[in-house]
Length: 215
Image (cartoon, rainbow, N blue to C red; front, side, top):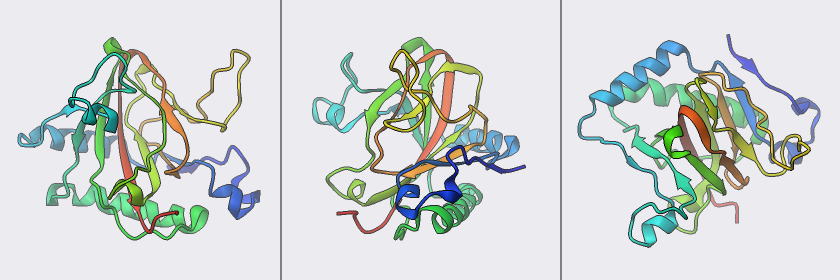
């Protein structure tokens, strides 16, 4: 059963404020769909996993170092017939959420979804950042999404700067439960990150939806 989370009284907020907040749907993808997607990815022998690098890593040697902002591994979800069901469902969710919440001018998904693995043995993480970049297609990113695939890990919280409660130690809390199948949408200009995974392995899928640049 899908459950739309509305922790901040979303329906009572102005449109301007809605556009600056994350929005999530619990149970958007079923356990069967998640397992099927993972099994299909394993069969794609010509689509290997590799280190997920930031633009800075790519510019300076194309390798990850101790100072890297991101410690993760990625696999592209190719736009091939085997994954049509996944992209069709994702596009339907994007349309419904954008129509009811963000109302952005969206035109396409110009980049394939990325399947991510954050390993607890390496303190997998992604420091706070925004998804919009200076060149095509990152300059056209308008709406971002993350699908949570598992919950048998510790740490690895998705956080947003300035969103959610601030605990006494000054660290940010995640607003979202680690419920497999949950999809979280947010404007691509929001500063967000993934805290270090301290135990186990975190799996997630990220996607960016594109349209005319905000600026």
